[in-house]
Amino acid sequence: MVCYVASTITGGWLADRWGRARSAATGNALSLVGCALALSTTDPDTAMLATWLVVGGAAMFFPGCAGLFSDAEAAAGAKPMALHVKLSGYNLGWSSGAFVGFGVALLIAARPLQVGYIVMTAAFLLAGSQMLRFWSLPPLPPAPVGDRSAHPAIPWLVVMYRLNVALGAGIGMSLIGMLDQVLREHVSGEAAVTVSRIVLSSYAASYLVMFVVLGRWSGWILRPWRMLVLQSGLIVGPLLLLWLATSQRHEPALLAIVGSLTGLGFGVAFTASLYYSLRSPDRASRAASLHEASVGCGNIVGPLIGSVAIWLCTAHLGADRLTGLAAGCCLMAALALVVQLLLIPRAVGAGAGRPYGA
Image (cartoon, rainbow, N blue to C red; front, side, top):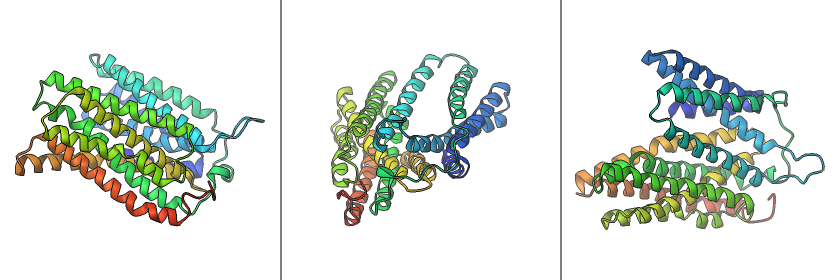
């Protein structure tokens, strides 16, 4: 994950200087080299290098691709597409790809590892070939106008939502990485895996739904108080999980509601963080890479917070591990809420909520 964060930032820097498509295609090329190494070696050190290349190349792809989406212009004679609409298409693309990827992984789980690298090679070739179509685009896009123009509240909103998306990602990764393990104290191993998959599927489906909603409705743009309400699932979900854990209730339907609420809240934070990053009047790809780096940092720190909370609750409070996980998620959710309550007044004071620059 550290490799992913560093490569994302590097990709954003390259995209704004060398060109969005060129940096994205270069990332794909690195991933292809990693796949080739993985397919041709049994040496552990070489396999680790191959993994770094695959992950790092994929990370470099992101900021260039996001920049292309934000810079895309409508066809001749067509109505310009709003940034939040383009962003919705982008988010639906990567999230749908994640669903397909998980599905393929389940289908080939029992097959040799090389099959997975062959599938990844095909995916990287397809994505890279699309970037080659835009290789000749100039490194610097046209000056942003309309809903890409500058607004004095955006710096506050960028900071607020990058922190929020990091904390939201931390909650999500804590659930993804530890939920089935902590549930094993209460249900059988196979049942724990099944319940965990139900919760995580609800989580992913819900942020996908929010991507659709925020792409069709523009009433959230520069309206941070509305977004606080929309993002409330990010704190209600963990609080519900804490109540279920302390009440010794582990019904799949109730835990699925936890996943859905948390996913809706994360979808809001993710969309807002990327939207305001891409509204930067210049160096949009670098800004998008910092958004993705925030997600990566949350993915690293979140499970650490969850693990410490589990240890504290089990070792010192006599609680079970599910309660500890829920407490860690509640802590991250509370921090996200505090960040909003501190920074929203600053953003409003700078003009958020007014029509200027929207």
